[in-house]
Length: 188
Image (cartoon, rainbow, N blue to C red; front, side):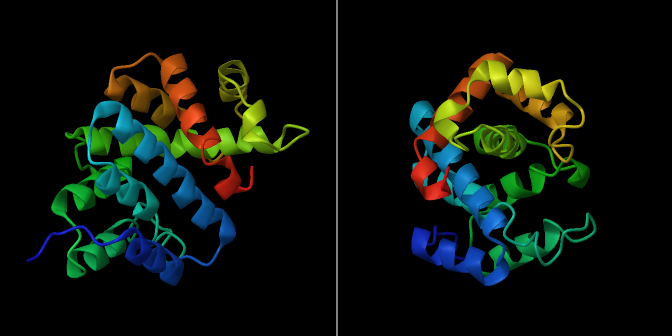
């Protein structure tokens, strides 16, 4: 099987084929932006990392349950020839799959997925509704509020930073910065 990386345009088309909700598309874009920024910092393959972030939840709208997501998406990605390293990272971003996060790609995807969504939630309660007004202190404060962005797993946010081997504040700052760089694309 050919495991070359499809183009960004092909990946975006795939995301849009399976995901119609603007919020889920923006989540893919946000995670992509974070993954690209983290890849640049680590000297990794920015295209591979970015497309992994973009497509990590592309099947979620159709198959949001744990029995199907991300498994159905992985089947589709395999049929389309997406690389195994990408598919394994996507499997590992959902802790319930039991797939170990052994690569920097997999660890980073897990670390930025929940946190990027949380950062968007923090931005949306700002009067400006802008990522430019989000800071580490505000994110840390909201993480302590169980009722705020209830769907975001705090345990995954903390575990993500730990798996990357960086202090939580440093990880939050890097993720905020990555998202601020693509704020126009996210409409925030």
